Amino acid sequence: MVGIVVVSHSFDLAKDIKKLCKEIASNAHIAAAGGTEDGRFGTDVKRIIDAINEVYSEDGVIIIFDMGSAYNSAEMAVDCIDECKKDKIEIIDTAFVEGSLTAAVEAGIGKNIDEIKRILNTMCLNKMP
Image 1 (cartoon, one colour):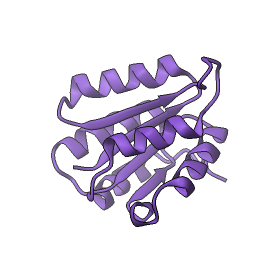
Image 2: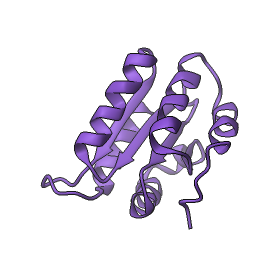
Image 3: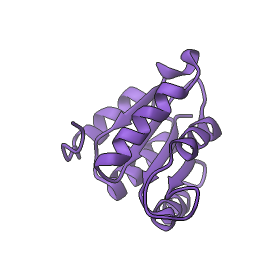
Image 4: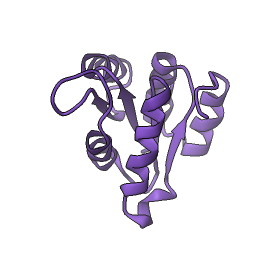
């Protein structure tokens, strides 16, 4: 099953989106990476790496982010992942809440990463540089 990582500047927002996704798609493999290690607003590359590793499978991982610098942190996290895993990790520009929910549902019913990406691309917000 495709894993989902939600990256937010807010620990609480990431945690709550994960909770909402699990309520709708209980079998989804979803991890939250929000806030900084010391509890501030921001993103943390190590938290993102840990979240990727938590949900990683050969089916791949989709990373959904809330805004600008979260994308940069997600990119840095992917750069730190083992080379053999990198090709199966995608950072997707999509609506944060709606995209996370959609990804969780679609992954939960067994869609592959390319099918999920096509659906999420319809909600693209052009947040990536």
